[in-house]
Length: 255
Image (cartoon, rainbow, N blue to C red):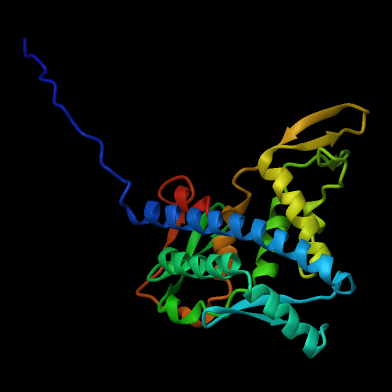
């Protein structure tokens, strides 16, 4: 009778595999965006207290050589410059934007552009190059936060229910708008309630439940911001379909 000798095997370490590295890098961009959202919301509350007349004025801001630049077709030039000065005086905000840009470079430079293709993920044949040279000015930060909020409001909600935060403020992230002081402050409130699990669900049958949460809501920030990096895309050597059931699983959670 032949005996079977046990062989000790060590599972492969995939922690340094490129998809895992990119997942961690994009998760860091999400954390950056969550911190940025909190800082922007607090800053806008202070600005609104000084200038309530600007509550609904439409604007956005981008990074610009280590500073922040306000872009708007709605503000007068003097109001735009004043608002720009207020944002740049907030060193925490300026530093967080720079950290966001740095982490976007880590997440995307040298990687393939991957898009959803039914149940698979498809490489487009394009690769991100020189993201460091393209990231400055490419991301409209308020618009990016709005897209994160709107995406979080797309799924996981009952059609016959209404939602509020613990204080009774309405929650409707699918309709959130961030490109004004008042809109961003309200969106920040809603996102905070979602991440912290303090949303109250008011069902159509009169019942109430507590604790809707999505701590990963900000994971979509990296892929959202990457859409502004078109100038960093160059042809890559070949493309392929990644099965969402195999090696595309990690990437599938990123888009």
